[in-house]
Length: 82
Image (cartoon, rainbow, N blue to C red; front, side, top):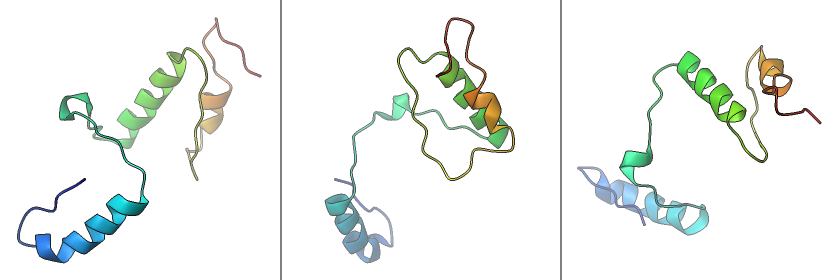
């Protein structure tokens, strides 16, 4: 469960409690999180994660970008597109 901290904790508590009740969540250690600073860094990280995937890739998004075909049609030489 999340905890609201700070001067607005009492205002946020009902919202946070409801969100904890209805939304899926999982615990992550802060050392496992890498903050990406720019859209370009995000896109390069996404491509690298796709290249290093061992089994399958599933993306759900409204918009990837104007060069999204690069993500779909550029597998590594040892991987095949469907």
